[in-house]
Image (tube, rainbow, N blue to C red; front, side):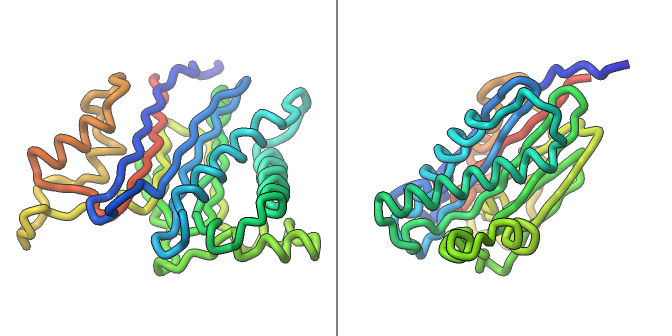
Length: 250
């Protein structure tokens, strides 16, 4: 018997308390036919105009998603590879057209393709970040020195090196029987007590944001929870944070 495909998508992107001017993150959530595409991007703080890089990547990925031919049989793994190659080809083209230096394209990315009917998920991570599937958490940590896509664009173009990059330079995750899935920038790991107290936290902010069902169904769930963490528990994200949480309703 086919599972129902009722689901709730909650998203939030908010500037970190240690970032003075702009939120350097960007997030994307789109639906098309039986697919959900979601992605989070995290601009490098030491890069130039990192908010621009994150937003540009997000808009190119969205354009690539709607350019895919979905009127054929193709598994999720191959679809993600095709989407990623289309995305990179467009990034290279726009970089050349606008003459954008590498220093202005430093952003990480986590892409998730989710089939709403069979609940299979394919996730790739380009750099640091966080994901959770069925309440199993995975911290993607490259010691805060992510292997940025921008570092590989010239090689990918000149040596036709997409497949090598896709296979060797990024992290891959494949899931089935998905009940809930969350992707986030590593700002989700940056919560600090505003009072500078050395006491243990009385609430786990990650579990509260991505597992706890309080306010589920409310479109402002994540925003309100961030406010509660700040106002009730004196916990704030010091780094920019972007979260996409998808829950299937049984």
